[in-house]
Image (cartoon, rainbow, N blue to C red; front, side, top):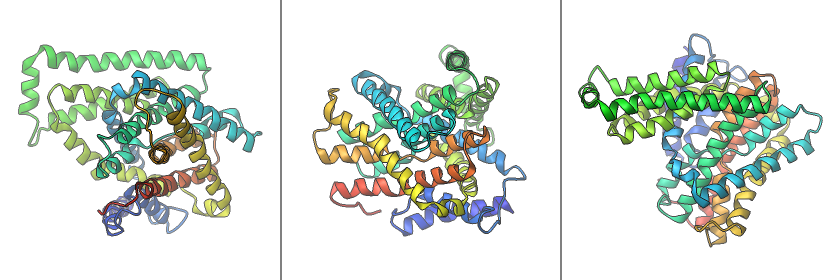
Length: 387
């Protein structure tokens, strides 16, 4: 029954979003549906009966696709280095703001909140940027650069800083995980390069009831999530690494796999993840302290958007935006974050670092950025495109 209600929400969300001409993104509607269906409202759905497992797979699929969409070239070069520096400055700024607001909180808890406040929802922004025709323009390329760092940076920071190990020990474990990931990615790449019969078999078994490439990708996802779990890292990192490997493998000649994975991910698993995440939001706790909700939205804009705005204005990297309006649009896009906020709050609450009430307000603030910031960026464009 829970899964039936969750999938009903998954069907209703895109329909309602289109009826509203995209004024409310589908991902926000999924979260709102989760709030409505969850234990803090109607209590029509729960996480038992395997729903929590589907949600975990949805989280993995979301970050696999995010890793797949990430062009590694965006992380290098002068613009990439500036984007990394900007994100680190924003993280330090967010930590300072959180420390000022809650100096008595545990340091690891403050780090968790700071990481959540400085993420960028590149996967959520890509359809918006594509729809607005910005992808091949300087603004679109700047959004991709800062979005790539704003997605990968928090994922790595979660694995290094939100752990019971020392920072040095966490870095060693992360390096070992990177080596293991490289070995796991090397094997199928080598088989595709050196064993032509393997590629032909994938082509022949790629459709119908076999779907061998898709099964192989799902195995890759689960193996790397398992390896991350064995290394006591967050499974998000394993899923992200699987996406990076997948990008290289698909470049080797199987682009049709992307469409199949989007069907599986966005058709079922990812909507389940967002609805279940919404079910964990205590709407009463959010409503009880609306000032904190608004304050977190403002802090996200200041901690993530302001450094991006200033770096684009004052730090030359060869592709700086010259228009103040475009720089403001970039800052709003860069401050749009939700999936990583959800992931960080789940990790932090599971580790006992965050109270459930604060986690609920953080997720609500993240949903507000997805709802508000792209809309404001479109207003700066001068006209809102019709859907």
